[in-house]
Each structure stands twice: as structure tokens, then as C-alpha cells.
Image 1 (spheres, helix red, strand yellow):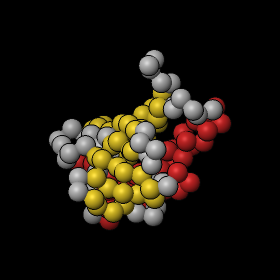
Image 2 (cartoon, rainbow, N blue to C red):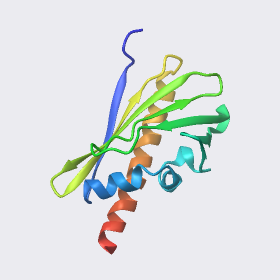
Image 3 (cartoon, rainbow, N blue to C red):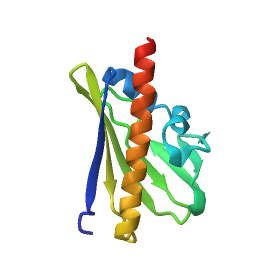
Length: 138
């Protein structure tokens, strides 16, 4: 299969990158900023189960905790298809960059891809807002 079209969506965040990673990498925190997981995640062995909205329940497996800011995760759809999501936190001076690589799936039209990109951007804005508010309190 040829490479899928991709878009990297990122935000600069005014907080220590390790604090951002530690918060964002916890599946139980994701409903606070990742609107697609607003209903929450339930642990199931090494995986997490989420209500994927119109597609039904999805299985999510996250990269193990690491020192590199990697929060990659594989979403397994009810029909067995996998969607790999690359989510990274990297240092940037006293702050951080959080980046999500959005891959356009083969069955996705332009409007759906743009809608997904806007959705990811809103989620990263929410994450940045939470972390910057938290940074000012500490």
C-alpha cells in the first residue's frame, strides 16, 4: 500500500514537556481533553475500551510509558481494521510541542479529513489550555 496522505497538527504549550507527557499519556486523563474519548476509557488487560460513537466500541492500545514523549496508540475498530495514531510530546525550551500525525484513511473524503483535522486541533487546544492553567497554579 502506498503511504497515506498525512498532516501533522501541533501546538506549542507553555509547560514542562515531562509534565505534559505525564498527564497526556494517562488514559484516564484523556476524556478531559480528547473529545473523541469523552465517554471515558475502561481498562481491559493491556488495552482500553472506548465508545467510538457511530462506529461502536473500539479497542485502544497505547505505547508503554517511556522517556521519549511517545503516546502512540493503535485503535482497533469493531470490523477489525487498525488505525495507528502517532502522538508525541517533545521539549521546546522551557515548554513543549505536542504533535499528532493525522493519516487520511483510504475511505476518507476531503471533507471528512478536514473535519478530523479540525477535531484534533480542538483537542490539542484543550490539552494546551489544561496544562498551561495547571502550570500557573503550581
